[in-house]
Image (cartoon, helix red, strand yellow):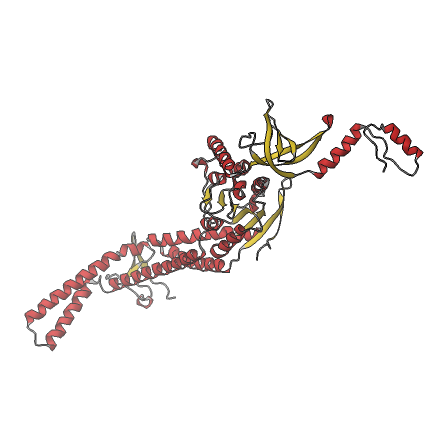
Length: 82
Length: 422
């Protein structure tokens, strides 16, 4: 669970990074070295984000029990559909 | 079993039983013990009942407790509604209500009554009255204030849903999320969303989401249900739900019924969605839009790089050909020379065309030069290398061993010497 959390959270931050790369490049006046780095990063990010979104499958779970004292909870797969 | 009349004393019954050995009578009990047994039976059997009836003998006691009788044409039952319970509308005799409670036996008087924990009015008129009353109360307390509405996350990581696990709402919501934003995680907390008492389930579900460990807590909640009658949707007009939404630290989108249905929950929520489907749409970015943003970003980056590279290229070319202008003029001159040689046009005619052409060329190169200010190019990390006589060096082989050259950078010039050809 913790693993997927990171991947979803990073989707947003990577999307923001891509936007800022495009903005930076369009702003112009960038040293050559930085420009090449931005180009490389931006192209990779766009491809990665596209792939992540295309591959994604909605994860649905049911919250079955919450233990307040233990700060923990239980879930089970959601199967009520069709 | 022998039958005793009311006049028969217990003592007599026991004596009679002793004479008549076949029968095994109940042992003698005290009133308290018997009542205790009755109490145990009734209270464990009727621990949570829902009953509809008409209010009569209503007393709003000074203590704050309310006493009344619930009746229909053939029977009646005493009811008590303790001061500590919340009631969001006023009771009155003759009013039809649905009560939920448990039976309790009051031993000192040998009576039983319904200890009511929830009352819901029956009938559209009564419901509307209750709605208005609660609306005013909560509005007065600031539960609907715009200033407390929170911003919703643009990219929800985890979406919590409070609704029935078997209703239309969950199906509609999941369908939209799969299509629009499958990257999210959904955590459903099933709750009954109809009938008296369901408001407590909904309220509890909201509270439970809020006490989850931070790293597993949803960053947005959808609370709602599909369409239904005013009575069906009433859960979302209950004070308990309104208070739970208000207390939630997680932003909440309400999604109750259809477009036309407006509930108290809608006013407290951070965002009101007209339907469950709309709620799912409102809180997520669209997959196809995102994909097109990614692809246009990639193209923008490509385009930008290509433009810059060709700027460098033409800037270099301009330098190599002695700042372009001379080149343009000599090209035009060369053309004229050829034309003069090959045609029968008059000198005047040709000269005129030469001027035209040169002017056009000059204009064009002026524009290009303006667009590619060499200084801009230099500031990006390029350098120009010239021989001492000022001509530009564009090939490594043009620099001989130990020969000197001038490196022009954005902020000055440096003299260099060839040491090694790599």
